[in-house]
Length: 136
Image (cartoon, rainbow, N blue to C red; front, side, top):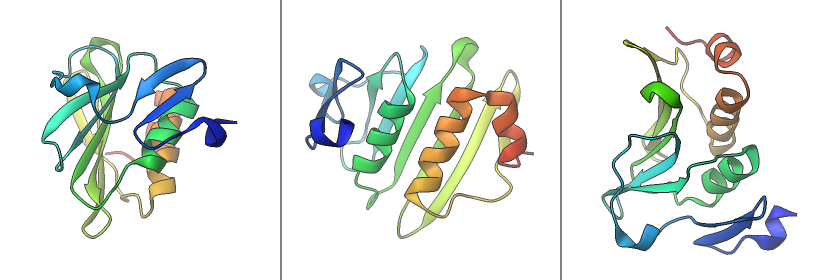
């Protein structure tokens, strides 16, 4: 089970060792597909993995400290992405970019679990998630 393998700041998920926070201190520009986190605590983009899975997304979202403003971005091919941003004290927002169109969720997520559900939904089926989570 993932919860047995997860230690704050690092995990082995789906047989892949990931570092949830440090990425060797190097800022990563978001260009290629993958899962990224930008946090107000370290002021840089960290690539979590270039091969996100449901389990990796759920773990990264659950373990992240949402006290400060955070952006979690799931990038797909062609530069398309779903991005959740916010902090527990201020609330959250979700945007989705497909081609030249950027859409905002009509109803923002209300919990950390909803953030995870939205990101996982897009990983499973982008078109279905756009409808399910009400983007316009």
